[in-house]
Amino acid sequence: MENNVKISLKRALRLKNKLVESVNILKTKVCGFNRITEVNNFRDNVRALFEELIITRNNLIALKAKIASASDPIRHLIVEMGELRDQLAFLHTINTDDGTVVEDSYRSTEPRTTKFKVEITYKEIEANIRTIQERIDVIQDSIDEFNVKTSIEIDMNNGHHDTGDGY
Image (cartoon, rainbow, N blue to C red):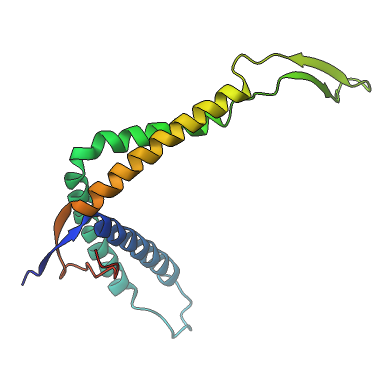
């Protein structure tokens, strides 16, 4: 008997995270309890855990597919935000140390002095970071609004349980 319920994408994403956590816990248990010494009498039913893992993973796959399908209208925003986050990580790796640097030399007892000139300054990098972060915030707000307003239908009999968030 199906027990279909409409839930917001926000709630579905929470549920997805709980299913991911359950899959990881079950994987750990199956790996940890599959091989034990013969004298160890305490043992979880590994076969039942393994079957539960398969069912939970299948529920996770179904939920992820529904989330992905429902998210199509904002896919471009999700992709943009991913690329912007990658750009932020890159900007943080750019060396902007400008001027004279005194370094110890492994070839000599005398310190070595080197003058550096950067093309893109620290100030420019920071301005770029601020602009990108502002755009990410705008995108995140749009995604959050979409996730609250958009619903998907799930079968609560297939291992989907209330996340308790009221959405």
